Length: 394
Image (cartoon, rainbow, N blue to C red; front, top):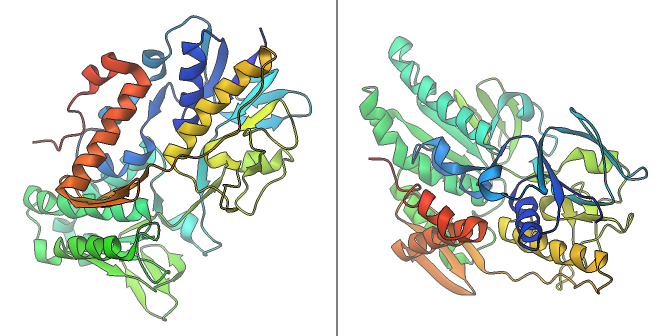
């Protein structure tokens, strides 16, 4: 049996691993942590909705078979010419490789952004955001510095907007917990583009704006950040805004290890793949999710989303099995199920299969996607274990 190695236990890597295990195919999955976390839900614990432990699952709770090897290690380099992966635990050989390394923040060359802004891209960084805000607000009583009560969120895509919705619901709780003047708390979203949530139609974008502004969020579109200093952003308008909390959600790019390994990449560092999600450089390497430069049927690169990564991962598992059994591989066709954005625990906007949804119905649909994912990950057992975990803590 060929040795298959999967790099990364995000949505794509886990989809590949789960499908291979169901087919009794051995593999090694290499991941920095011994758990899989729900990347698309990180705004929830960051914004105080629930406890952090509810947003991860131990890998061994999902991958049970002895033939499913889990290596907890950081990937330091890819050597596709040698069929090797270099980790901090040593070198790993493979016959087939699945690259699902996720993404890294895209700072667009903005000076000071990387050094002076928090990001939301892992369970650890979500915890950093949460604890930073809590500690900063708590310390207001020491000096009454109002910049401690100002939060700046850069980027009005899905991550930035969902984070703002969650934070807006957390602010009254923090004000009550630490005896803070609620009227002095400011939550400001800065977006260089002319609108928020560009993946949704105009009516839904306007509804999202209305809901967020009713919760006290200041949405400033057409406002580009040109520099980030410690506790301060500079804007293209010449204005500066002081704040003790600056969070960047403005974009992502592929893990830099891919470009460093010599793969043909796009401007975002994603490895070019063919219709089978197979590297155009190495036929025994598959690349999925945020790591893949896949051109869709519309001629445009597929955007980095959790649902795309899942679908790619499942297809690659089938193609790996087909390759090893002398069968034919299948081409990848993305089934866009839509986009849903939560604007807090009980309201949202989005569309499912082209049908728009907003308010409570959108929030319920968002919850349904969580249930569906847990079912896919571990069936009834996983659903039973995690039931109710995402409800706002009381």
